[in-house]
Length: 245
Image (tube, rainbow, N blue to C red; front, top):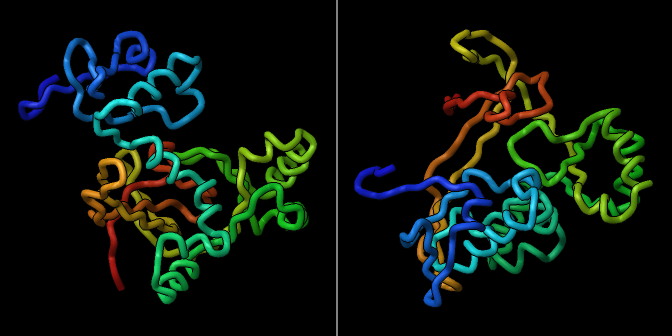
C-alpha cells in the first residue's frame, strides 16, 4: 500500500521472522526494502507470541535502527507492573526534582500492591469490593472484581510465586457518576456514566538523546456506571468529548 508517497506493508511477526533481516549498519530489511518505521498493531498479549519465531521477530526489530512504535522499553513502561514500581517510596525522585511536583503526582496515585504483600492480600480477601486484581493486559475485559477477586487470590496463593508475579492488586476507585447520552451501533440511550481521561504523549529518542517529549492531545472514554470494565475496543466504553461545567 502507498499512502502519500510512503510505502507501507503489513506483516505478521512470524512472516517477519521468516523474511526479515538486519544489516550490519542496523537497517531492517523486509521484502528487499529498507524499513524506516515499525508500528505494532499486535504484539501486546501472550497470544501474539505462540512460538519462538514471534519472539525472534520482536528481537530482530528491536536490534534494528528502525523507529519502533512502541519500542520494547516504551512498551514495558506502560505496563501495570511499572505503575506499581513508580508508586513505591523514593522512585519518583529519580525522575523529578521538584518536591511540590512529586507530591502532586503522588496525590493522584491509587494504592498499588504486589501479591507478595501479605497484608494487602489479606485485606483484599476480607474486603474484595475495595480492590481490583489486574493482570498484565490492556484493552479491557481482564480485571477481576468482588467475589471473583477473593477466589482468584486464594487460588493464586496456592499456585506459587510465578503466578503471583503476573498480577498486581489495586485500590478500587469510585468516581462520581453523571447522566450522559451514549450512542452504540447507531442507537442512543441515556444512562448514568463515568468517564476516564487519558493524555497522549509524543516521545522520540535516539539512544540516550531525547528528541521529542511533548503532550499532544487526549482521549476521553465513557462507560455506564454499572460496568466494571472500560475498554473501547472490547465494547465496554464509547469515545467521548470533554464538556466542562
